[in-house]
Image 1 (tube, rainbow, N blue to C red):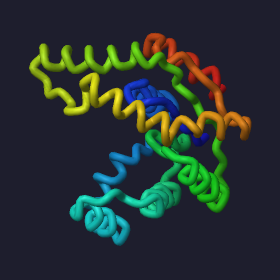
Image 2 (cartoon, rainbow, N blue to C red; image 1 turned 90 degrees about the horizontal axis):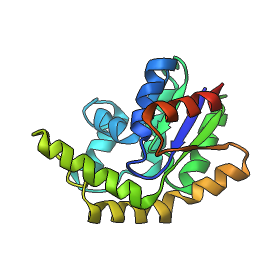
Image 3 (cartoon, rainbow, N blue to C red; image 1 turned 60 degrees about the horizontal axis):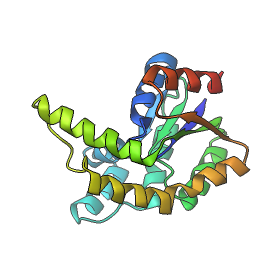
Image 4 (cartoon, helix red, strand yellow; image 1 turned 120 degrees about the vertical axis):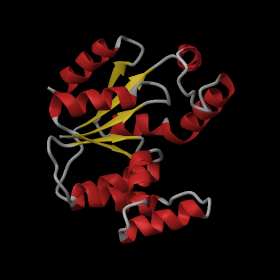
Length: 191
């Protein structure tokens, strides 16, 4: 089973992906984690990633698709969770082409619906709780950064909601419900 978790930053995609890894033996493909891993791998693709990142550039869609291609050729376990990818319509097309090339399918796209004001409060509270506990606070866990990240999401990633709806792949869950309620809703979708 291959799925995409879709939603704005802070919606809980990473939390739900970890639960799916534990409960369904799926493999979480987080593009950020994959880029960091590739950078230090010493592979041909890893060397490309390192060169771009060391120069301060943005990694191209072609490189990210190459990394995903490498992962699809490995152990598939219970399937893949695409977390943080695709972010744009061209990336969605490229992912669809790659899955078809590999004889794979996309089984579900799960949109985690959230209210923006509540989401901003959630991130600001997360930062305050981390600081109070003496834990590191992410640099972008503040209201201004969150609003900027949401603007980027709506400009570039939100169009994927209509794209996957039109393909008949989209299901939505209440991303502001409790972690366990969200997990239960996702389990019902996945069957």
